[in-house]
Amino acid sequence: MSETTKTNEEKGRPRYNMFQNIGWMFRRAVRTSRWLLPMAGGQVFCGVALAMLELFCAPAVLRQVEGGQLSGLLTVVLAFGGGLMAIGALQRYLDCNVLFDRVFVRIGIINDLTRKYCTTDYLHMEQPAFTAAADRAYNICGSNGGPAEGIWNTLVVLLTKLINFTVFLLLLVRLNAVLLAVTVTGALFSYLSRLAVQRWRNRQKAQEDRLVHQLFYFEERTKDARLAKDAHVFGLGAWLTELYDGAMRLLDGLHARLQARYLATDIFDEVLCLTRNGLAYYWLLRLVLAGELDASGFLLLFGAVSGLGDWLLDLFFHLEDLSEKSRQLSQLREWLDTPEEYLTEGGAPIPRSADGQYTIQLQDVSFRYPGAEHDTIRHLDLTLATGESLAIVGLNGAGKTTLIKLLCGFLDPTEGAVLLNGQDIRTLNRRQYYELFGAVFQKVSVLPATVAENVSQQTAEKGAIDRHRVADCLRRAGLEKTVAALPDGMDTFLGRDVYLEAAQLAGGQEQRLMLARALYKDAPITVLDEPTAALDPLAESDLYQRFGQLTAGHSAVYISHRLASTRFCDRIILLEDGHIAECGTHEGLLAVSGRYAQLFAVQSRYYKENPVIGGPDETAVQHTAPGRQKEDTTHA
Image (cartoon, rainbow, N blue to C red; front, side, top):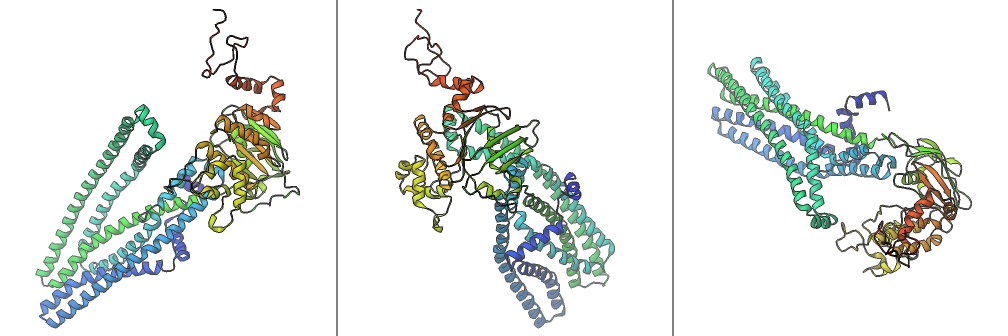
């Protein structure tokens, strides 16, 4: 980052100035739509022409009336009337058709935002500041009136006002310097009063956005079917209503204070306008009575005085509006220009091994999240050998998920290195590195598409889906019967947020669907992060029995809180405080009676049965709730 950029950010200044942002929008317009700029120029011409016709029409008609020339009067009326009709029709045509080109430019920006969001480094997704900036960028492009589209209207109006103001100024500069100064001063004071209100509103914007966000959150939560159960059981309706009403009262109070300021400003503007017009009327009447000005000239100059103040005031406000839109566009561009640290477009190609197998090694790896005081992973050494199945266990917060993110290349270590077949993955093409992994994460990502498309991650229209392979993966994942029972089998749509008639899978079925997706990819390394969390005991047992078949020929990393599932893995590591506390096989770790054996004993006692009440094992549990033991009655 350059020193200039740092200085601007420290002072809260946008990285790109107004002219840079206008140039950026012009370049996008040229690439996206060749007609936008010509039509915008046509809008400026129409705006100026209409203002001039309206200014000179009445004086010209009055001049013909004073001269008593009927034919000239008809000619003037027809000329001005025809001009107003023609220019007005052209203006309406341009106003209507330019909207499409403005939308095309805005959609192009939205596409760039979406592309950035889908391809950005994963580490950015872990940073709240990045996602908050992304939300702001999308809001800037979220509507027709937003800066990404509204800037065109601001530029057209601003240029029109500037030309009109120049014409009116030329008309009045020869009249009277005092009258001109009064007009300009009145417009300036009116602008400053409105600017003060606008800046007060900007200072309250953060609070307003927070309250609007709260109201939107409450509205969305009341429509959430998952909350409906709790709302009925615990009576949350009244509480949510109270929270909603409280936020609404605060928002209403904020808006009431804002409207009071606007009202005071409007009254101040009216007083200024009355003073300006009164002085102009008085001065022009003196000229008329002195014979220095005729009635048509009086009408022309009085209209110019009124117009000059209005044009100047509008000019100030549209300059302020352009500055605000430029500031927001700078925020959008800054987010788009967020530098990527991973080599996703360049980097060395992944070294292809002859047998298609890969070894991943963590060398003295430490990792600390931004802003954290301590490392989550501390000086960890680990090797995932070719074809090995590795289980990672530990208590919550031990660093299991962070370790997976490091293995998968979602995060880079703050110290040490992650090696693929001996090469630091930071030097390799990261997209190709991701292709080595097939994963089932805790949070499922079922997309609004067919079952076959969800498994294959391909679009059916392109004909790229291997349906036989999809069917085989569904069978291996234990989802064959479930899919066969759906209305259209593997062509049944999922995702009721998009398709009203879509099927809804249960949580465990969705996890199996993610497993089928990982199997379809057939990547050299399989990552299973709590794949049985949503499964019932029978389904979990079935998956354990399939484990060897599912990971055959692949390296596999398995995270689970249920230690009984780890016995199917070649090696188990127990994480504590970000480092490997124990390592070995299931039987070997039990034999050393360490931390793993202790955790396994705690879990396993809840699954034991004591067939004889009051037998020698007084810690056994007979179908009782966890933590409660049958009372020993043998001595009664």
